[in-house]
Amino acid sequence: MNKTILEIYALSVCFFTVACFVITLGLVTWNVVELNSPEFTISNTQYECHQTDSEFKKCLSQQFEYKREDKPEKLPAGNKLTEKRISEYKQIINAEQRQALQGIAQKLIILLIGLLLFLAHWVLAKRAR
Image 1 (cartoon, helix red, strand yellow):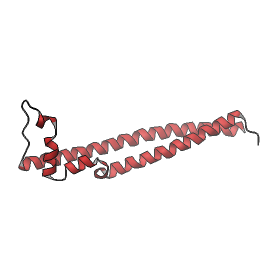
Image 2 (cartoon, one colour; image 1 turned 60 degrees about the vertical axis):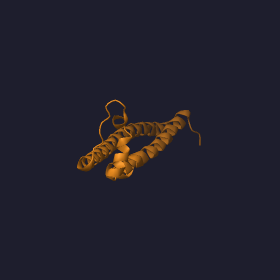
Image 3 (cartoon, one colour; image 1 turned 135 degrees about the vertical axis):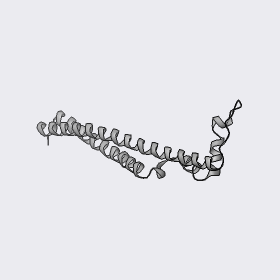
Image 4 (cartoon, one colour; image 1 turned 90 degrees about the vertical axis):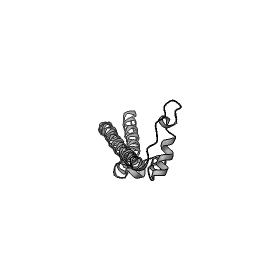
């Protein structure tokens, strides 16, 4: 079983592209989960802050615009607080889904380039035999 340097090189590239496929497919799977269940994948801090008005108020009070010494903004109360909490939560969910779509697009590009690289080197390995 005498292998040429060219065949060893081509098969090595094929091996590493398969390893990249496995890693990238794992990341794509996470992006699909992120897209379909953004409430599950947002950070725990963001999730906890938006569950109740009292938690949201605590989180808001830590933000710069409500803590600054010169002209701090007033914390919203009542319905305005609830509306702000719900509105912010929707924005966080939308941002999470957008980020997931971007991740899927990026990883599909990586998979496409990897596939082209794999196929080119697979043909090269077959010819080297």
